[in-house]
Length: 190
Image (cartoon, rainbow, N blue to C red; front, side, top):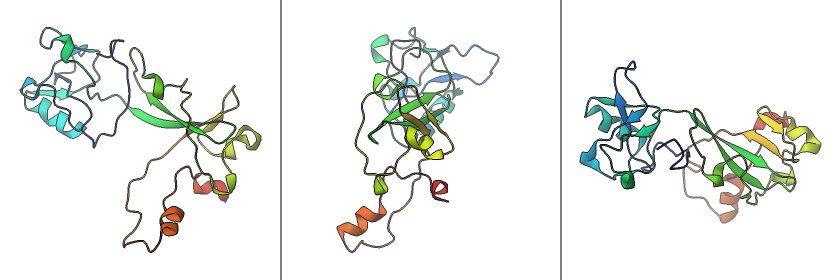
């Protein structure tokens, strides 16, 4: 249900974190209520698998408003995949601590508090040379970063997925110097 009974959130589409929500293939038919392929009742799946489960019943994943409760009892609802776009941004406070924010297109109802714009769950990041986007450096002059009224910077991020090493690292220092979290985009240093 995307109308307030369950919070909105984002998820990695390659991980089995949600169930399918299927709408008619004909876009002219209402997409307010989605149904599920109940052969897989309660199964959490990847985004691609959810699309295949919908196709198996002649439907497709969609940006729905709620799950049809005539077909699915409300106690069986939970997170469902949607076609709404989602991105992750970070909020950086004046100490360099970071909190995650999920930006959800077509958000309906509440958003999970731990990933909302009001998120105060900050974690420590070890910034190189203690340099991080902040209001005194105009949020690092980084494209996609804006100063917030509370003194924080909110920045768009890009997630990359790849191998950190092609062979076994020779030391823990090799690992720590190669695998970094919280690095500013390289263009900032040009």
